[in-house]
Amino acid sequence: MTQQQLKYVCLITAALALPLVVHSRYWMHVIIMAAMYMLLAFSVDLIYGYAGQINLGQAGFYAIGAYTTALLMLRPNLSYWTAMPLAGLTAGLFGLILGIPTLRLRGLYLGITTMGFSEIVRLVLLCWVDLTRGPMGLPGIPAPTIGSYIFNGLTPYYYLILTYLILAIICVRILAHSRVGKAWEAIREDDIAASAMGINIAYYKVAAFSIGAAMAGVAGSFFAVYISFVSPDAFKAIESFLIFAMPAVGGTATVAGPILGALIIYVLPEITRAFAMYRMLWVGALMVIVMVVSPKGLVWALSSLLARLRRINQPASLEGGTGSGTS
Image 1 (cartoon, rainbow, N blue to C red):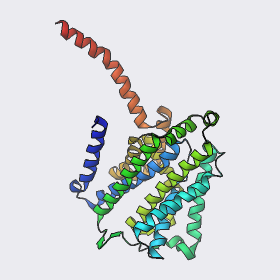
Image 2 (cartoon, rainbow, N blue to C red; image 1 turned 30 degrees about the vertical axis):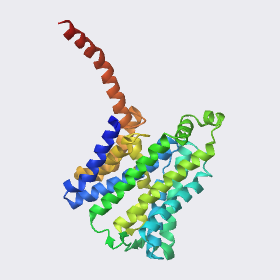
Image 3 (tube, rainbow, N blue to C red; image 1 turned 45 degrees about the horizontal axis):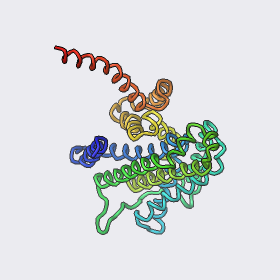
Image 4 (tube, rainbow, N blue to C red; image 1 turned 90 degrees about the horizontal axis):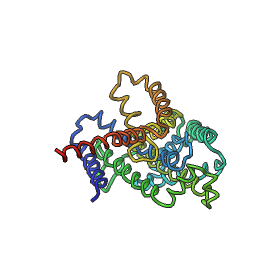
């Protein structure tokens, strides 16, 4: 087992043991929501960090997943294990539908288009009262069950979202190291050069949108059953901004980046609750500072700093080693 694999095993073991250590229901709820936002951060990082496409409308796919699950469980009374994959597929299908007409758009234009899509989804949910009950939302979404076991309490939901998060990280890493990931990297760096090399730009861009949207749909599906209530207020444009900010601040195209970003943007305001009302102020300020100092995020800045410190310490350690040998 390599050192990196051993590190991942230790982290997963620590994550599995967390409910044994955290006895506060409030902090357990914060940890569950943080894990869900980490899943959303990975979903947007797949589109932005790996494929280089700015997506400011991830809350739209998140909402589609949540409402699809709620409607399927309340109307035809489907089980959660049937509704969840259908929610992911539905969100992925909308990602495909949005990805095709936006192929020619880049940068800010693409970001504004995705933001508009998210607002359209929210307004449809708000105005289609016969289906969604509009601003009243959909209450009473049943809990998932496995045989006679009903998800009751926070611990089963923690292990459920942890499973989704680990699977999402594995999928993202496999894709990043595959031919698909290399194609996304080439498109992110220079899509004209990538096209000249024979890479099918349209195919890989739409694939990134669709896979990222499906991941957000699964996160929305979890949100629906965990909270047992969905309403359009939970999917405002500010949600898209915060989800996008998580990998941007933490570090794009890395495993640690979206996790660090979710901890900073979601958990830190809970720790400093007295200043939570200023969250958007300091999140905005943090984004400005990170984009100026290290546009790829804090993880990349820390990696660069550690590499410089190693280079500075290396001659000193070699000199020290020579001196001790002489004496």
